[in-house]
Image (cartoon, rainbow, N blue to C red; front, side, top):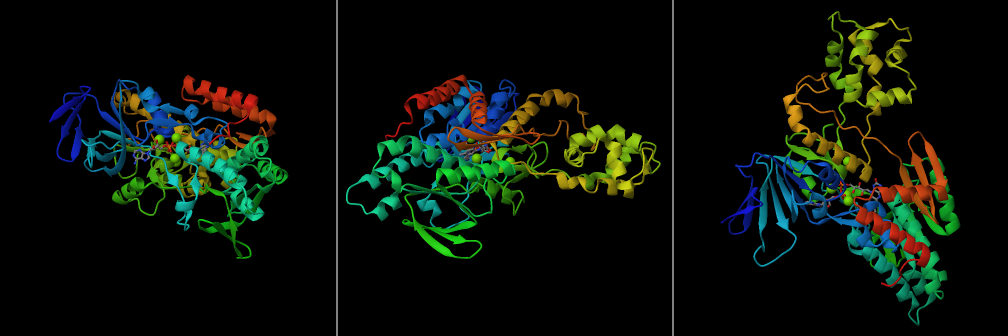
Length: 547
Ligand code: FAD
Ligand code: MG
Ligand code: MG
Ligand code: MG
Ligand code: MG
């Protein structure tokens, strides 16, 4: 049986699989996007949906604004306010499939999916879809480091449902502790909240939970409020490692004043249904402490789909998919990856040094003058962002400084290839991997959409801005990340902000900056309005504490 899906799809059905093939009559290329999170949504919002046949596959039919998840755990913001249906974003020009992709077949350009909604007619069914281009934006999963009992006994904070479960669980703990005939120890156990992981999410959740208890729950449960204890466990020797030391110190001080018990160098070795067992890194001492609730937030690992795909294309022993600077998965054409499931394998300047030299050495004299180098430096800076970073960190003013650095001579120096290598030998140490953040994923989504939108235009003008590599394949500017700064909300209406240029601000004023940035980053006016009204409601009435 052949059905036509919007005139673009040919949909054929066999016993247990549906095969969604491309339509040979349609001149449009098909882009299949996996995921509906930050990377995928930003790509879809900016993609010219009229130019392509766009098919989106994700197990959840909405985008979730993850930075506000910690607020959902305590009811500061409602779950409904931070989600936006993906169908609102793609409109009528794209198609959405609520399904989970379980296999990417790179060779035959097909993906295999399982629908999320089970019904009699599509039971056991598998959807196979062809693609011309595939965008992998499936994100990552919470990482337990295979610590026994974590999967079963801990909460994660990754998805909207996780945040809702945490919220119910906090209230449950208070209700349990309030029942009659409990010993003090039992009350303490129920009201012991443990957060594992001192990254931004763990710290923000601990701070938010503290405020929720202090401002709202302690008024409703006055008899048990003195038994509450919040512990933050971190295996490393500091919290918020990606932040400025001033922010780290402030956070530690604030937690101390708030009575949040911060334990550094404390590794969780097991979580049973009754107790959480930790091992002190310094002394090796193992202890077990009873708990009411544990929230596990120690970082991310690859989803099975991504691990399997990496195996298939020979990217073994990696935690994320490696792409080039154009976000193309290395070792497979037509497949792109972005966000938490991928990382850019920044090309080293040393690998191309001979090519760069000969490109710059136009008179083929075997010697390079500063002037000759100057003529290609724009291309080099574009292709190897580490050059600019290196010059900034070393406070070098220009390219002649860079060359002089190793030579110590003035501007008319001439370099042969060996000296040229020496001058640039330290540059590659500045090549950094980007963090797994919404900021990175959304900038990558925008970049990729822009590439697709201009594909045609570039096809007609293949030279593009990059002449260095000169193989005509790289027709677009490589992806360049712009760091706009980061926040660490620390509770009590105080937020730490670290903006580019080492600008650090901590306190109530940055909290207002935080409110305005996060309101402006909402994907739609609908969610923006809902989030802002949730904040106002909380200011006036406090948080809702019914389960
Ligand atoms: P995601 O946004 O996770 O999206 C992945 C998508 O893929 C989801 O829609 C998922 O349903 C779908 N999917 C999963 N498996 C499959 C499959 N098999 N087939 C098809 N689709 C699949 N970053 C910041 O920059 N600032 C912050 O303040 C911040 N706060 C955060 C707070 C919390 C609590 C969390 C959890 C994260 C926070 N982050 C923040 C990080 C940010 O959320 C991630 O970096 C970002 O979501 C990555 O985007 P992504 O598109 O790669 O993945
Ligand atoms: Mg995504
Ligand atoms: Mg998301
Ligand atoms: Mg993710
Ligand atoms: Mg990444």
